[in-house]
Image 1 (cartoon, rainbow, N blue to C red):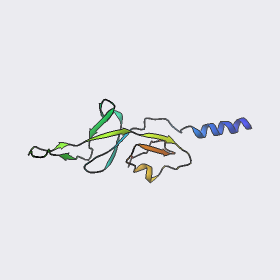
Image 2: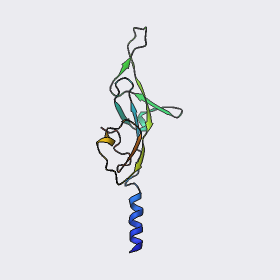
Image 3: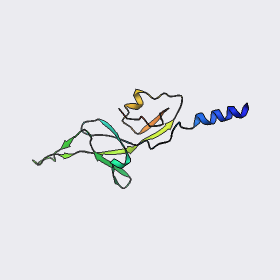
Image 4: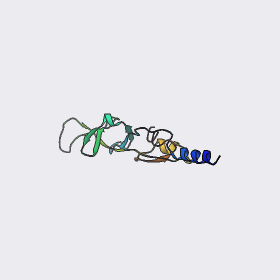
Length: 111
């Protein structure tokens, strides 16, 4: 019986699933957060970038050129599994990369 209790506690500490949590970034122009996968990003050293998925553009000051697409720097989602914190609205609408709840980062910034 004691062995069963130890096994139960060990499994509660482990994440329910392991996965690539993805990346999250916020557009400096429209201020909206977006979530993406590693395959959709362009890497420059340790930084990851992609165009704003909401279609934001900017024009350089003093020029009449058509606007260029805004690039967003994405950060890897750092999910920490905590079975006592239910995944909810706060996690799903997050704009930063840190997550501590029962989803282990799977739903972080997904709305």
